[in-house]
Structures are given as structure tokens and as C-alpha cells.
Amino acid sequence: PQKTLVVDFWYLMLPVARGKTRYLFRQYRNFLTHPLIRKPMNWRFRRFADVALEEDRVIIEGQHARLAAGL
Image (cartoon, rainbow, N blue to C red; front, side, top):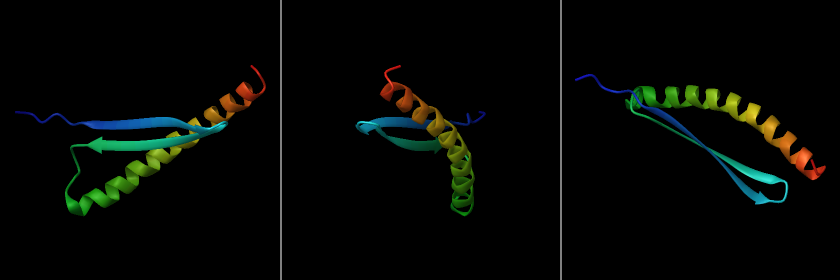
């Protein structure tokens, strides 16, 4: 039988104080898990996540500014 490849990303945003949000990221996959490849692949997936998180950070900071301004 053919194996189904799974990759799942979880992004959690937790308000921790007024104007502050903790942003947590977790990734799961069922491929490229051999010990010799796991570390480089984790690094590569982390770089992809960093790009996404930076894009989201800009949006979240903009939302905080609009909320503070009463919009």
C-alpha cells in the first residue's frame, strides 16, 4: 500500500498581556525522519516557518496598532 505523507503546521497565538502576543509554532511530519536527515530538514522547515512568522508578525502588529487607535 502507498504511504500517505503527512506534514502539519500548528500556529498558536496566545495573548500574554495588553499589546503582547506569544506566537508558538509546531511542525509534524511522517517523512524525512531518519536521524541523519532529520536535523537538516528541521533546519530547512524552520527557515520556511520563519518567513511565514515574519509575515504574520507584521499583520499582527498592524492589528494591535489599529485596536489601540480604537478602530
